[in-house]
Image 1 (tube, rainbow, N blue to C red):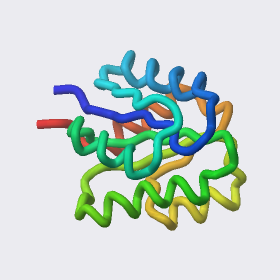
Image 2: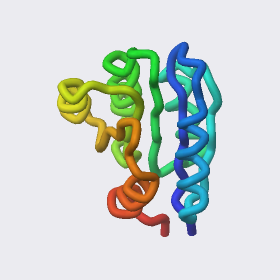
Image 3: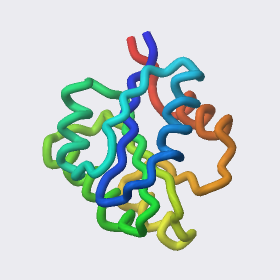
Image 4: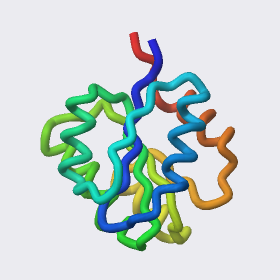
Length: 131
């Protein structure tokens, strides 16, 4: 059974080409991918993740709001006692922020230029298979 991965665009960032490229690459690698669309709140993303019974959430932000939005998704999952959904992110994120985001609970951060194969391999290695 394929992994289920939600790709989400939190906040007011209206640029979703990269998110769609990642969604397609993950799908082509054998995962079931749900794309939530633009302008989602962290709480809406978590609600969608629950409703869709996903194994992972991939977040994409290019607006610079990653330090607020990404940790809020992780916090919202914790508030609902959900600890089995892997959260990873990507976007234009400075190296110093990557450290803070992983400390906040994100499993990985991918920046522009990350090879699609590296992202799909990371998902294969870090998101458990469905049983």
